[in-house]
Length: 438
Image (cartoon, rainbow, N blue to C red; front, side, top):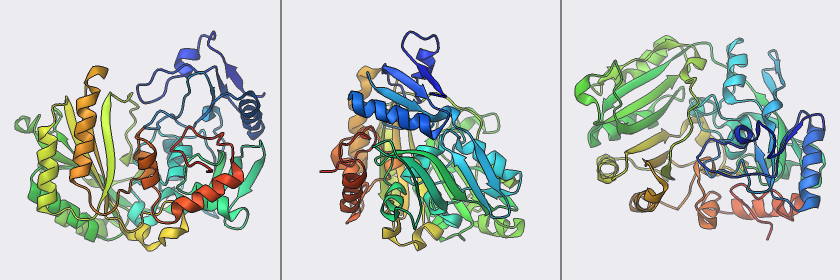
């Protein structure tokens, strides 16, 4: 191989086997390929040896799928080639790149790919699951800007796929996760972001304020996307001390348009009596923090909500306060806009008409506490359920087959099973939110 193979006796092994969430697994080997041929060699070896295969782009899978106990890990971190065609507004990116690395390069030309909200996640898993971030209402999901992909399949072959070449597979990877092969390169459409207004605004955590914020975000122009976190306020130097430790709404907002339009779009949010308002004209890439902290022990659940009125908001706040965890949090990503105008069957991400993604988390100190907090998270989602059991696959932990099935409503699941049967009937790629061929 042109790349490296790291074995348990190598000095870098312990660092190389570490992923974002706190799991302790010991792979037989960690492969760091440099080329698609290297990836194919590793795939062939895993298939013929019978060893479990894990694939890692950035290692941020909530279920810990980027590593294996006793298997082979393909760690794409050294595959970071990036080519920008500014005239065509396209980016050709290998999947060892992070969202932040692609964003920084595109930003030099005032262009952007609509990734998520973290610069440190790998573009591989982020893209294959959907991708919901600060441009979602303006330009849709990450997969909605995916033009082409190169994929190493279970037989070790390398396919270039798009809407014309292997369209069934191209449909499936846009939301179906890593079930169908190892994505080694993506071609994205880039979008102009000439000016922007955004940043942090902190609001009181009352049922009325939370409901009104959600309504404003849903009714806003497409240029405005928001990600709000409800949690006990940390002791930030710019936050008055009387709010420290009390529930607040910490909302990150971005208006990707002219400054005048941004000021008008954000006026209703600023009318909600903010405790802190740090929103200002900025460059798009300034929305992303630079920190990459390991994830704490946490019980997390995700769901879709369509109605966030005062009663629903009040129930959410009550459940956060009722938790006995060290810290609890709710994240709310209001959808709509460009995302909702694409037909639900266009990609394997089929939740186009849902109103918002809601995530709850209970953070705790020691593994023996897990049970009570997992129960709290499960009960919270069950109590607030609206419509079907749908979930966004990129926020799904290790929660069982029923929850995976819920990520793919209607005939989406059956279509994915058909594609899986065609390209990976032996389920070599199963360390993911797994779609089985049978």
